[in-house]
Structures are given as C-alpha cells and as structure tokens.
Length: 167
Image 1 (cartoon, rainbow, N blue to C red):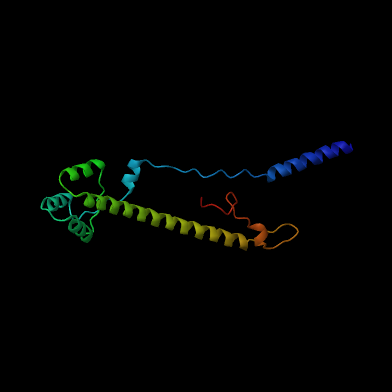
Image 2: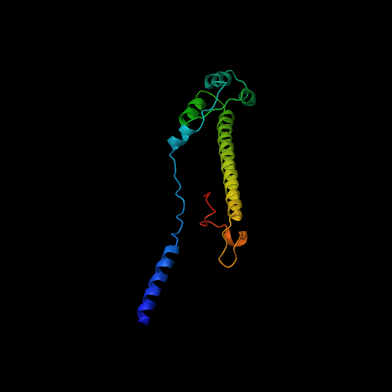
C-alpha cells in the first residue's frame, strides 16, 4: 500500500515537472535575398547629368576633375553595370570619372544600409528596454520572496531568454 502511494506520488511529481519543462528557443532564421531582389529594393539613382552628357564632355577634352565636379555639383548618381563601364570607357570617359561614379554610388548604398541597420538596432534596443521595464514591474516573485524582484525575475538577459527577442 505504501509503495503504491509512492508510485502515485512519483507519477504526479513527474507530470508536474513535465508540465514545467520549457522547449528551447530556436535560433532565428535568417532569410537571404537574391541580387535581383536587392536591386529591386534599392532606390534608383537620380542622374541630373545624363551619361550621354558625360560622354560629350569627355569627348570635348574636358579634364576628369572638371567632369567629376559637374557630376558632384548636379548631385547625379549612377548605378553602372560592368557592360556600361566598358562601353563608357570605350567612348572616351576617363577612368577617374568612372571610378568616381562607382565609388559614389557604392558609398551611398553603404550609407543607406548603415542608417537602416542603425535604425533597426535602435528599435531593438528600445524594445528590449521596454521588455525589461515590463519585467521589473511584474508582481510575480519566487514563492518564498513575493513581490517584484527584478534581479531574480528578469536576468540574465542572454540570447534565448524570454526578454531577448531582437535577433
């Protein structure tokens, strides 16, 4: 009779512990985009000084520094393919001008990506701070120490913890 009671008690205890078990948090899935999707998402550059005009200026013998100054002054941006670069070079556009066009567009793309990453990081940090504030305001503490206990209830904030959701 006593052993039957122990078995039942052990079974109930096993069910309670199984109910308390938590499934591990799966790492976030990173979705990659193709080059075509990236090209579609990027804003098209604005060229106030068309490529044909750049070719005309180069054929007129204007110095590369002056052409670059005109491109910069007009705030023109060009997203050139490899074929366009070769074609412009064959039409007489100086290498320095082509390098400036590519470097300027590349710098603009990297600046936009850095600003986007900074905005996402700021939003993540704000969300994490909000979750920590909510955790600290909760009124559920351990059974022996009722009340808010932020150092016990909310930490450690490590990947996989309930308050780490910005991955």
